[in-house]
Image (cartoon, helix red, strand yellow):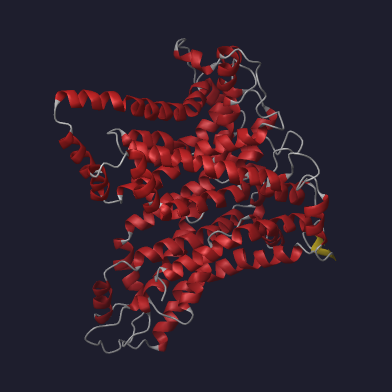
Length: 325
Length: 296
């Protein structure tokens, strides 16, 4: 514990969180502030910032076996990815395919369905006394790792109607032929998306229901007294007041989608063939299986580019919220 | 919520009104209870399967076990010993504990600096950290692996994964804790300064004790994040005998693809700790996740 020369206290010390005020901070104190922050900054610089720089650079090279810069390629990796790699982007057939298109499917269906179910449940559950129980039931999958979620859903989707509960319903109850939900290239992406929705909806519901409780009850009561129907109350009062939490949740779901990897690795390893690959899976596959780190780095850069707008948004939102002067 | 309820209560005084209300609300109850039960089915199915005997699993669906009671713990016995999942579970703990404590400590120190001690470029540096919060892991995998391999084979030990998780947990820790620290009463900290307390003393004696909820929220979030992580462990733990459960289970899948007795038991072992944490510390857990929603 260092003793520190105290500057004369003034009547009303400036709020330290704002940093600059009437109270003069000695050079020594400023140095101390740096010391608190320095360990974290060093770790971030070595293990986060430098690697990001390295990867961006590597994306313009043909990487070698030791992840070195073997051969400068310019933008060839990106060109190849976007125009000539049908596992990544295939616009020649209909519907289009490839990891990028699959990820687009994830963006559309995962985000919209999660929002609809989560919002619907949040709105409905506030009206019942056992709301907590409903929330808990939906939230439990949030605690489980994607690896376990994968095993759980492999069991659900099992092709044998004596094992998989979905085919038991499909075959046993509805009398249809058992479906290979994960073996059919046309279905597999939706099957994976649904498993992931199952794991995420609880979060959407909890965030939105907390926000709903923040809406003053008088507003809704007043609308009810004026004869507004429940649907109108939802559309004209709740929805506009939920726009901020909805945007936070949507961003959260979006980041989730761009980074989705674990569940695919566990359930299909990108298959059948390459039909359930997504961007993050392609990065892993190209880098660590196909021995093309430069190519994989280009995929990672594409991920970074997709997420960059959210980074800008976060920083901007934080700035305007005046938490930082 | 309470006010909405009481307001509704007041309006439904008479018996007939109450009956009408019950009837009109029946679909609501059916929908809510139905969805909640539906959501539990996959997890319950896995849990039941893990306690069934292999022949039973192969010949009939897990839902039959509700009527034909024939449980066994044998699956757990074999998955823990024969497939090495017990060992992998311990690895998960060894990886997770330091990978939680390190970013918590470094993050809290930095957050204190950002919140209460001014220094040059403080706001700029903080915004940088906000931006770093959602950098995808994929941009670090290759360079970090190279770095670890070239410097003392850190990926052959736990050091690599500890450091990687520390780096990826830090931005969130700093962000979350700093935002909590700035809400602490200014007078208290100024008074301590006037009394001659050093910054470190203020941090240890005032800020940390007052911030237990925020520290706990981050710790739980990070703990579950690391425990549940697959990708980073897959890349940064090269020694198979040190790999955590999340990495070993996919191997189990490729070896015993259809042996659900083993797979279910393994998956349940992986889930058990997070579930215990979830049910015992639900409040902090939800808070941590809500706060962490800015991350992933």
